[in-house]
Structure formats: structure tokens, C-alpha cells
Image (cartoon, rainbow, N blue to C red; front, top):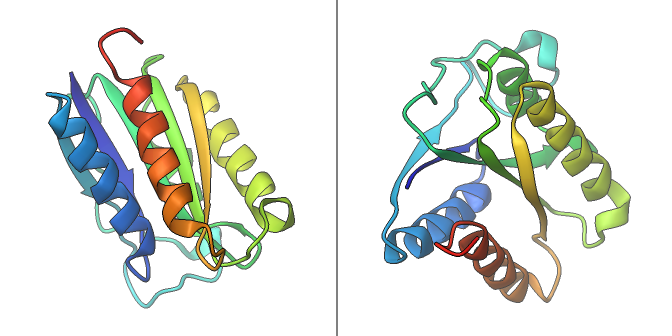
Length: 160
């Protein structure tokens, strides 16, 4: 299966999770590319209205998709939000969404942000099968990442 991981990362945290997911999926025999989305100008971007993307990765070649984004200012990062509103129809492909956040608790920001990301993907006909939240300041961060990588791998196993 050819899987695209579309990620926006400001500090490198979200990118590192995307790379771990990529490594696991490649070990399973998938062809996996990480597609970075970047805005023009300085980051972090303060509002979605000011986002101008340097490119729009073409997702048509992928059988499945993974989207990863940080949380910013208590909401889904405006760059990912803007991208998901502009992306072409996802064609009912299996889709996974994950976010990274500095807050230690999911209920504070994470749940609202991941719900927003899932809603945006479903509005573009993505078949969201899994969502995940990595709380970067949580002492259990390494285990959270391992769990997410394992869950994503199960989503794309030959028996899934």
C-alpha cells in the first residue's frame, strides 16, 4: 500500500512522530512518503486567514493518508486547518489523524483540536479510522508515541 503522511511541524516534535510512523509502516512493507506543508513567512502563524502555503502536496497517488499537526494557541494549528480546507477530495481513503500538544492533558486542548481535524478530513471525504494525541510535556510521552505508532500499524496491517 502507498501511504502519504502529511505533516506540519514547527518545532520538529510532530515531524519526529511522523518519522516513527513512517519507519513502522515501511517495516510492514508499505511505501510511505512524508509530505511537509509549510506556510510562507514566519512561524508560528497567528491565524488561518493569514496562511499562504508554499505548496499543496498532491495526495492522488496515495491509497491511505496520515495527517499530523501541532496544536497552537489552544486550537488546531492554523496551517493544517487551512490546508485541510483547501485539499482535494480524499476519496473515502482510510485516514489517520494525530496531533501533538505541549499541555499535559488531552481534555484541555487536544480533544477539541483532534475533533476539528477529524471533522475537516471527513468534510473532504476522508474515512477517518483512528485519531491520536501526543501530550509532549507528559511523563508518559514516549509510551504515548509507541502506542500511537502501534495503533497506526494495526490500521494498515494486511488483516485490517
